Image (cartoon, rainbow, N blue to C red; front, top):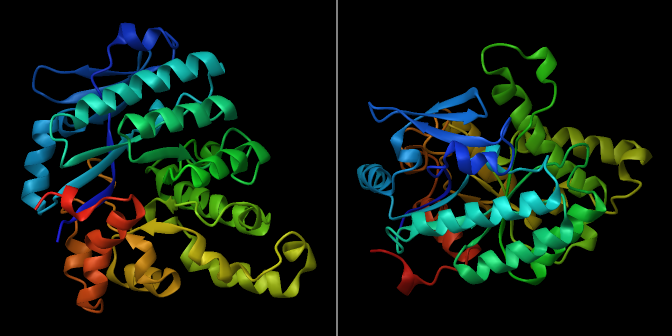
Length: 337
């Protein structure tokens, strides 16, 4: 069986000059140091220290071999999204980054598969770029869980998701630009507290708004980081739907009935958390995702699933690769051994 890690990131060697075409003051670029380490920069400001595996296919393959990963699906580091810029500039940026992703994947085309980014601030342009990227070799798209003040239930974002469902373009939703940062100055609190909440907000907004009633069931939708806090707080949402009419006014069915409309990855880092996630979602809707190669990702990819004492062998096989192959339409013959 091919083990598939479906949630990893990359950042190509974008120069400062290339980034300046988008925005010389804030656009992200990669500073590579003499010792092989790197720094994602936002204009003149350091944004995040990073390792060579983020931009080097060769180093990536070494780590995949170390962890027994046959195929890795990778997508943009969220700072690359470009949602704050005018639509035309963002579209050109996304197209360039998507082409860079294809160049990255071409170094090992059977083992590295990209997801595209799109200019989500322009629905028509986002739909065009999603379709172009899929035709060019991307497996699907990655989007952020919100666009400024607009959650996923916004009409324009629902229209984009409907396009992806109708065109068989799988969608990975990733949290970004986290809420409440003015109260979270230290200890990576935005990543530890707000990021799971952002993902839950994306899921619950689709459920309670009735958006899932309007979206085609053909939509393949996955939420990163185990769906954030959704599985742990579904009971609270369900209780509110049962007892408050303002909660169920746009949602005709119990919130728990919508868990078959989306999938999640396995990046929860704790055996008990993974057991609950599988119980809530069903093993068929959980896919191995590491959030590699960042420090908050799984450092030995697949170890949590492989070593889980309570998961059955069929469930482990499904989570480690079978579910992702089906979700992304990967034919068995095309998978690496």
